[in-house]
Image (cartoon, rainbow, N blue to C red; front, side, top):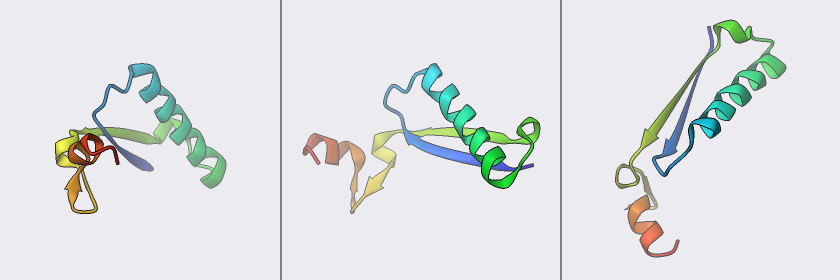
Amino acid sequence: MPLVNIKITREGVTAEQKAALIRGATQLLVDVLGKNPATTVVLIDEVDTDNWGIGGESVTARRSAGK
């Protein structure tokens, strides 16, 4: 049973967009690895931008600085 964990920042991703991610990740495992879609698990973790850092600063700070 393959498991895919997608981590994204919490910034208003819609239910439809999440559904598309789940479908797409599942189909990728089917196409590339021949996995059974019925047993493929996809998790989406949404992380607050204050809890996600790049280059020594939070995403919140980077976005505020226009980076």
